[in-house]
Amino acid sequence: MRISGARAIVEALRREKVEVIFGIPGGATIPFYDALLDSDIRHILARHEQCAAHMADGYARVKGAPGVCSATSGPGATNLVTGLATAYMDSSPVIAITGQVPRNMVGKDAFQEADIVGIVTPITKYAFQIESASQIPDAIRLAFMIASTNRKGPVLIDIPKDVQLEDVDFDYSERIKLKGYIIRTGDPHPYSIKRAIGLIMSSERPIIIAGGGVIASNASEELIKFAELIMAPIVTTLMGKGAVPEDHPLYLGMIGMHGRIESNKAIEEADLIIAIGTRFGDRTTGKLDEFGKNAKIIHIDIDPAEIGKNVKVDIPIVADAKKALSTLYSKLLEFGFSKKDSEWISRINYLKESYALNYEEKGEGLKPSKILKILRNILPRNAIITTGVGQNQMWTAIHFKIFEPRTFITSGGLGAMGFGLPAAIGAKVAAPDRPVYNIDGDGSFLMTEQDLATAVSEKIPIVSIILKNRALGMVRQWQCLFCNKRYAYTDLGNIPDFVKLAEAYGAEGIRIESYEEFEVVVRRSLSTEMPLVIEVPISPDEKVLPMVPPGKSLKEVIWYG
Ligand SMILES: Cc1ncc(C[n+]2csc(CCOP(=O)(O)OP(=O)(O)O)c2C)c(N)n1
Image 1 (cartoon, rainbow, N blue to C red):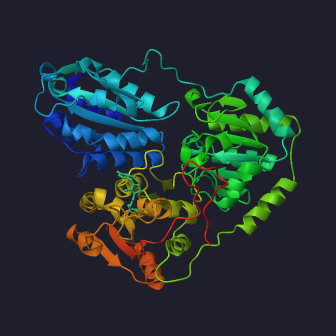
Image 2 (tube, rainbow, N blue to C red):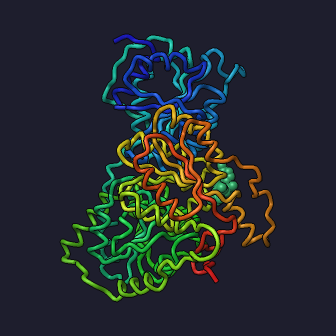
Image 3 (tube, rainbow, N blue to C red):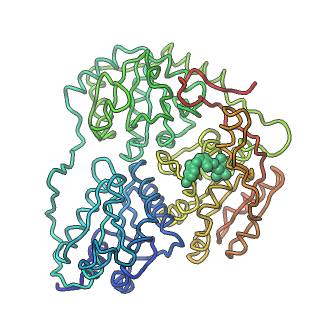
């Protein structure tokens, strides 16, 4: 079949089962958009390309399949950068298709020219420019293969405008290879498994750290079976939240800077840490020299580059989390290993009870922790939560229990303010039948608030709950704790009336003043058919606690009183 390059892109996307593209057209993508008009692929017109990338990311994380975004050359493409960096840091499969100036103008400072491949190379798994239309089918197949195999991540394909206009014999061949790119089977090496089994069987106080990799490889069931067999408590990283239902008896809580005290304590006391699908980010480990220093460490990760990068490990297992866990499980059964109860679990239960979240919910004003607990009580278990970045994100991580994988969507590695609203839009498109709530800060919301227009136009009924403290709260918290209350430029001053703002976009806006009002509004919001913004006033002095100060060990925690 002989078709234009633009049609070839669309045809290839259809073959990859793409249902939706988030983007903004421009001069350099006009042929592609023209071809898109004749297809059954839905296009969602974003109002900012950063949002288009976050939408594709939110979609991908919920769906477990690549999300696609598109931008024109130059400023359109550069606006994708934050979104792609976010997807890269959190290993999310996002495909970006950018237009480029015609080939004969590349390198000539043409209008809207930017070397987007050069710009995004460090923040994508792969980025490349197509040089002729004949390359299009293979390039698209390659992009999907790279984004969604091994450790997942974003891929950018840059397509000059004249390439989109050139004709190509469309052949969507099955055989596609990239020199040097090997798709791992994900099977663990038998020798590492043997060594790990030895350690597990001799350990008295094992603990499991579940990272985002557990969710990415859909390994939750295997994780729970394994943990129950060896009677190991499970803690998660921020990205691992949702890997196990947070009401499972072996679940202890998140670890790290804003981790629960009992979880961080358990890491200190463990004699064996089994870390799965985590890169041991600094927000997770605290001071590296002190992290897990009383324990042997087994690290399971699909990406060999992660092993030993931040934390020295005793037994590396380069493998897919699902495969490694089921192999460990069946080997342990072969050896007839099982644990019924242990002193360690009694100790864990004691820690759990002693540090049961005893948060200060007294005093003036609405408390974020209580707001989040009310919300949790009302929402169904499969509701999807997205967040902004800052205190709102950490309060949600601490107080809002997650019960299912792929229902907690947050910018973990990059920590990009403005993520919540567009990610919620992408999430709702991926799961239209489930409630999607964006828990946001006023500062974060104001970074991408314009995409409420997208939600309204596309009739995507997401709910944004804005914890309005009129401040860049998390930075203000650091200034309070570590800069002697010298609040340098964290007071937001003039912020809009969020109710009116929502209404200006054609959405609904509600301000609540009490817990009772909040409850009523949230119950009603479950059946909302239009985007809704709920403004919740809180004090700028509210803190996210516990907190391990940056650079300190997990022991050196700040707590109330
Ligand atoms: C794009 C971006 N710019 C700056 C920061 C640094 N930063 C981290 S948290 C934060 C404050 C966030 O304020 P807000 O969204 O109002 O949330 P709050 O902490 O008040 O809940 C800032 C400025 C960031 N993470 N991302």
